[in-house]
Image (tube, one colour):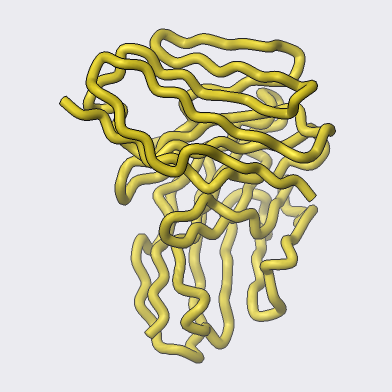
Length: 114
Length: 112
């Protein structure tokens, strides 16, 4: 499968624990996005990378959230001191500036905070 | 920031009939409007998109229309089939601000 991949697919954690998710974009896609989707809602933008540079962060991304893309390839999203309100599907998408804005989504990581 | 509204939230149509989903956006700078289909438990998949330099785009049974003046765009699905049942999301963005702002989704059910 040459599409966007995410790991893990499911994560159950206890409140207060830290979690880290990984996203591998489509090869040679220089843009990478993180979104959060709660039940019955559309995805909400969290943050965006072009190559290794983090160009935009949503106000939804509190100081407990941090994202990295150290070599301009895969990205990680870490949530510290998880809260029950963090329970959601975390989606990653990638795109290439050569073909415009088309974003291709990964399967997501479903986080459940108990 | 951009705000995208989507209607209806649920839509049921008989197999073979047409379905129309409508979205409005607030930021006149938006110039890219994709539509995504999301089946239960699966990733959103891009089904069609339109840029602001055209008013209509068609791909087999799916078409999208854009009215820049009124700031609304619509998805049209003709000859609906059971496999069209899913949640559909519209979104908007513009070159230079690449994040997508999504609507709240339309759950489309095709009745056999």
